[in-house]
Image (tube, rainbow, N blue to C red; front, side, top):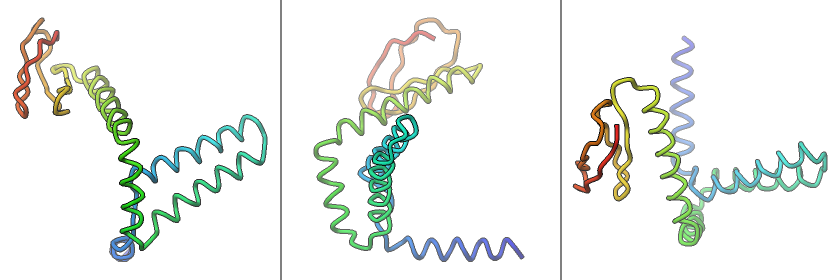
Length: 145
């Protein structure tokens, strides 16, 4: 019975959000700025920082639920034109860190990220120096396992 209502709620939410802007890189940045201001407010006990943080969070939610898809896309395109390289670099660093953590947890394989195409490459541990060829872009690397 509960499962039926949960599925109905999911479908209703999916339909409602299908005509909305949703999350994009600019929304992530605005939310991060709002979160930083709220954290600063926790340490400084100044209400001004809470107010500024709240304004950023409300702005983010207004963009998420906006029905003006063309305007939100244009805003995000301007943001990505100026900050796109930074966003892609941060995504690459997050991927590299995740693969390092995955390599530590996995006892049999080491994971690398191809520098040119960002493909994840898995090689067995304990083979010393290995020449690795990326299956996607055919770039070759020498890696120590």
